Structure formats: C-alpha cells, structure tokens
Image 1 (spheres, rainbow, N blue to C red):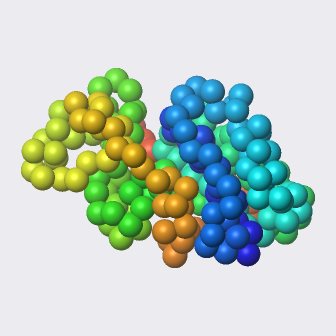
Image 2 (tube, one colour):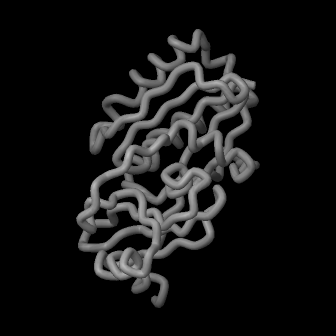
Image 3 (cartoon, rainbow, N blue to C red):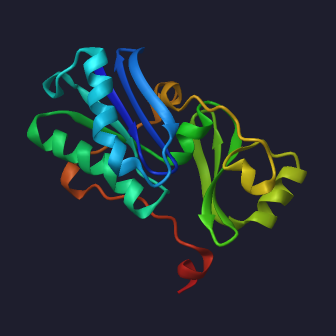
Length: 196
C-alpha cells in the first residue's frame, strides 16, 4: 500500500511517501508563508526519491485544519485533483493530531491576536478543540498540562516533532473522505462567532 501524507495547514510543509508502514522519503520543515512556492517541488522530490509516479499512489492523508486560509487549501486542492483523476482513497486528520501523535497533550497553534487554536489530544485522537487566549494557555501549563505546538507563544522552547511518523502512528483515526468534491477545510470559530 503506497501512502502519500501531506500537511500545509500551518507553518510547516510536510510530505511523506510510505510503502505500507515504511517511510521511503520525506520532507518536514518550517516553511511559513512559502508553502505554495515549495509544495509541488517537495512533493515531486519525495516521489522521485521513492521512485513513484502519481498513478502508483493508493491513498493520501492530509490535514484539514485549523491553519492559515491559504495553507489549508494547498495540500487539499492537490489531493482532490489526484483523487478525481483515478480511484485513490483520501483521508483527513485534524492539524493538532500530527503534532500530538499518540501523546496525551494540549496542542496550541498560533491564531494571532494573542490567541491560540487549542486541541486536546489523547492516544491519537482529538478529544476537544477551542480557541483560547494565551493567558488561558499559560494557566493550563501552570495546571500541569503537557503543551506542544507553537509553545514559543507562551515562552517555552520549541520541540522537535516527528510530523511524518505521527501521520502513520494515528492511522486508526484517519477519517475517510466519502465524497472528494465536497471536502472543505475545517475552520474553528471563535467564541464570539459561535454565540451569533
């Protein structure tokens, strides 16, 4: 089974080619606001290294948000095009889940304006998500929460996260997309928007 994993939702560009559970090639690096410039080149490089053609891909797994407006669409659009050209299974995971892997933690992603998208993850699953102020996140840290993600927002040192491997580690929690044409990014609304 040949699996292509992709993430462009947030600050990173993540591409991985797996044969069953073995990673043949990957790229995982910070690429803030340059994902659209680098994405196709990195996918092409990974597929060349794996000795794959697009027709070889059996399934694709992408993140569907939260993230930047443009970033969420890059990998998603690419995957949708491939999956409409030939029968390829498409799966999604929430962005938090590739930060957490199997770890139990609170994942924070910069939502700007002194706020963070927050996802509570446990054993590969997203338990809950919300938008919090950075002060609220700091309170969670003081309560002993294991915080990962954009931790520099609250004065912590960034961690080295194994995004590519995390995709495969949470395989049992991938969500299959039944209709590729109706797939859209997942946006998390603020408390104020939810009240209206």
